Image (cartoon, rainbow, N blue to C red; front, side, top):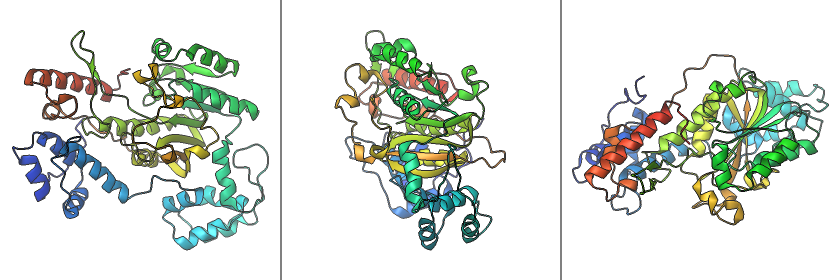
Length: 445
């Protein structure tokens, strides 16, 4: 398989040529790696912007600054990562105008539900709105039951905040480090009388969880009391190949993934020397891992989520690892329509024991008063999607390929800073081997 950047035109503007060819910039190979990930339009926009990275920045190098600028440039041309109610999300998806949005807001709950379900862009929106008026209101416990309440957009938003999901289908939680969110969800479903089960999963194995969370066995027992199932060592990008998910195709009604992260890209050094971290999540040497996480996550969900099923991903709108644009873009590529972005603190399930999901949890956790660096709780969002498959066969899922060994060798910031040539080469080889395992689908815990 050839990297997707193989046929991308080489930079033809003075900014990239100067920056990537200067002998004074040791990060030139990493900068070139960043630029080769752009298409011709983006390269032209970058040239026209007049942007040039701050080569004197003591915290971040030119490659990382350039990568962040390019990501922000793409996001400025796309959808916002902040709060969007169902009408705003619907308008953004179908590129409606302001007058159409106003008319949608005047619809009652029954009618706005009908329009959102049946409008597919092939007929005028106004025709579907008129068609909705004589339709009877839905009744019963089914998701989307829509009595004739006024202010349909507000009532619709309450469904997402109060977690009114299909009571008969299974709900799956991915990447729940200490299983506290899954327990919260199981209690919520039990209180509502749901018969669908909760499937709680962790990326780590049970032994690792016991080292980090002394309460984990008690949590698992409480989940068992609520008839929930717990699976460990689940890679959410490969559930289509996980035998534990066999025969679950098309049966899942709700999926949750809170604050997704591809994990720290650390490698072991010589015995007694510990391990290496040191890259910010936004660094191009490691950031591709976060984008792939979302792309492969949504592609795998297509096999298991039933049409109309909901997927909710909680994340900070300012996150620089899994950027909000990665979430929105990956969902759209796989026919998960964005239906609302609601503030995390307004979500009925937001009160649970949040954890970092790594070694830090042994000593401190966000739920114990510890915060996340450069992330405010007010910027935490819940991105909500509904699976609406078209029936068409989708193209093979594109992924980002890891940087080459030569590119990594050209890096001298992060963990490479102040390393001698021998140590730098050894670290580059270890990182490259780890990256090849990850992109090949090998579970690296």
